[in-house]
Amino acid sequence: SKLTGRYKQIELFPFSFGEFLHFRKSSVQEKDFYLPEGKVKLKKWFSQWLETGGLPEYLKYNDDQYVRTLFDNILYRDIIVRFGIRRHREFRELVQLLVSNLSLPVTFSSLQKSIGLSNADTVKEYMGYLSNAYMFYEMYQYHDSVKKQLRSPRKVYLNDVAFHNLVGFSATPNQGRKLENAVFLALRRETTEIFSFRGKGECDFVVFGINRQVKAIQVCYQLTPENQGRELKGLSEAMQTFNLKTGLILTMDQEFEIQHNEMIIPVVPVWKWMLT
Image (cartoon, rainbow, N blue to C red; front, side):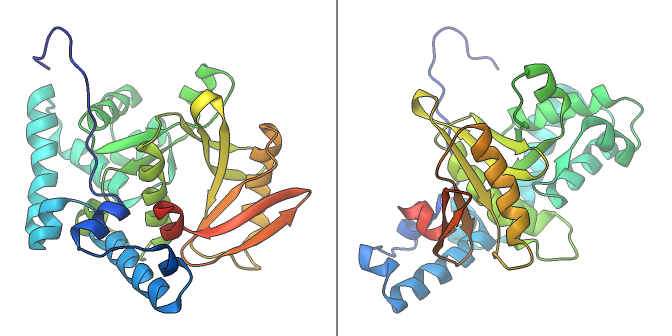
């Protein structure tokens, strides 16, 4: 905040899956995507990365207390002290709520009611502080109107999944949400123009790339006969809206292709997508 004049901002992220493999001194060759032993190795490493996250110091020493201390330092030194937040308990409850409910749509008013604050604007301020400190990323729902984007429920993703695993509270493993968080971070490395899309169904990610090229991506831990209709509905709605012939479904470990209403939708494992 004391930097003045001309400067260039460089964003540093925790290790991606590819960087994690390099850190573990595990090389990847193209044949690993097809040979059974190669796929087993990559899936094992990916599952470990999804559990431990990509914080280098944590990966080096495997010290859970380091993650908790880092988490507390960001909250207290980078946010509470810097911005003079007085309602420590409510602020902490908000953070705990966001960490535990990874990737779920939220509104300022719903969060305000959950933690007992009298004003939704206070929640808005707190969320801004958390985003500026790179603790969380907010992702808006796509609308042609910026006003509608700001008023619609948004999703919140963590900078690293280690915070969710070691600081958050959940009665279930939430593998699907962690997978979605990992995909968001991979997309966020490339662009800031990432949105969710909601019609009658929901599409997890609509991404605007170079020259405004649009991609529609759905994330699902496992595609089954029970959930396939729901996943295709949200994805195909987004594809129709942006006139796309090809979409993408990312899963933990499935690979095939779906043809749906003259649309081509590859189903690809997240670990393979991240490395290729």
